[in-house]
Image (tube, rainbow, N blue to C red; front, side, top):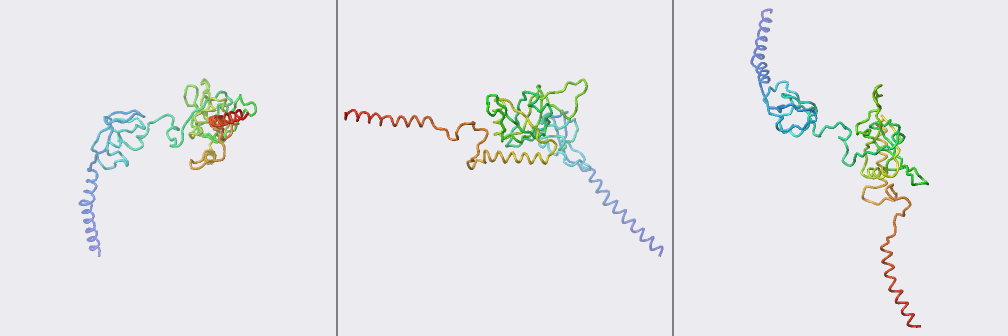
Length: 292
């Protein structure tokens, strides 16, 4: 029995050795020795620079342990922007390049197609919420008009819930109020506020920017769920005021001039009516004179 067990173990060992020698080793060897072409950096490219044809090259490298997603063709890289500093010989991975130009104003890179970014000036410390605004805040805007003695302050339905993209100082530099300034560092002051707006909101902001003062009131900060809900309510307000372009709405928007009737008379029409009536009056006058 012992001889039989040894014989079986011997046969299994021989079979296992044959499998390793003739199957496993050739498979590993062929995999490690196989090569492929990839796009590789030829020149050093700083972060944010456009990658051109002269900056990349095709290189034949070993396919074993090659990172997933590495660029295989130069066409996949040419025309993109370096998302980090790239050096000669670097493999080009998706996270190392960007299809859009890089900017320090990251909030401006993701503006929806039907929205715009517009800045408004803060005339006083109070109008800028005492220099406490931050990107991502949801604010409400009020308009103060010195010329309107009866109602100088106006609540603007189109600007009840607006998202702040960034806050900048008088030099156009982003202001960060999340961290206190150093002892010898001068505190930055808010000069402009950049917000995300629809074209209708942008028209109003440009109009009120030059007609009085805009005061900012903070609605919410750091509550993403509430922010989305408020922006959704603002979208409903805009839809009610301006409609979707398929039907006329009965509500009057803030774009209309206050105090004017919806359908103002046409002065040209009145002139034409007066001219049409004039010959009749003249004819009647002539007839009466003849009778006399």
